Image 1 (cartoon, rainbow, N blue to C red):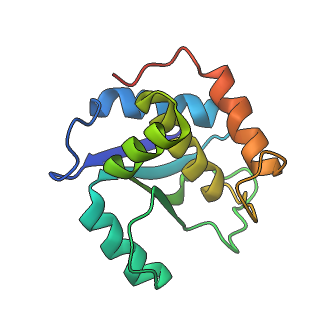
Image 2: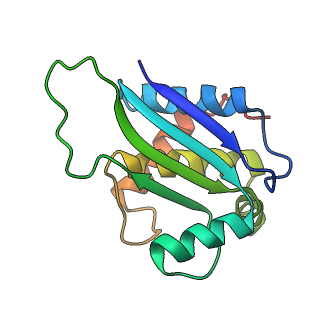
Image 3: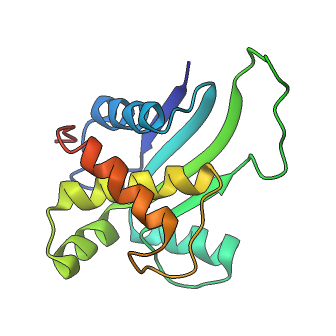
Length: 153
């Protein structure tokens, strides 16, 4: 069984309900056939994201999503019933809104895309650019299509 904790920072205006984000993340994990994970999702504003990006990536700018995996180099024991702490996904809501405008998609769709993107990074996926031919991004869009009916708002 997976465990998902969602936090919404005060600076994250117009955030969806915690319960809906939690349910969506559970659906993402189920679609990915992941079981036994613990992870957190944080929705924040630009300043918080810029601070994290500066501290952990040496980039003094905001970004849309950051993932902090705790699984790199971890080999969970076989047949273990202990939960595995996968890490944290941080999504910047104002940046997600700007992305939605730029890519001409609904804000909810973009927010779901960023959450899936972050979870895929926790699972060890990576990409060298943002082209659609990247296996990670293809998997991201496959998951989004399967979860199209899930609603965050």
